[in-house]
Length: 101
Image (cartoon, rainbow, N blue to C red; front, top):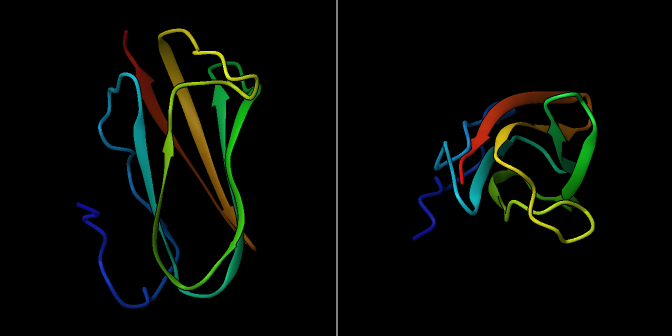
C-alpha cells in the first residue's frame, strides 16, 4: 500500500502528513519534478530542529518518508505540535503536525 501516484509531477509539492494527529508514526509525502537533494527535517513548536528524517538525492517522482516520533537521539518526543520542513534545491515548504499520545 504505497498510495503514491506514478509519473513525474509538474511542480514541487508537499502534502499534509498522514495520519494527523498521529501516534506513534506518520508519513510525509512530496512530489519532485526534477532530481533534487532533499532534506526533511522535524522541528518542535519553538523552532528547534529535533530530527532529520531524510537527507538524500532523489529522482523526479512522488516520494514519502516516515517519521517515527523520535528525536535525533532515538528517544520518543512528547505530545504536541511539530513542524516538518521539506527542502529540495530552491524549493522549501513547511507544514504543521500533531503528535497525540
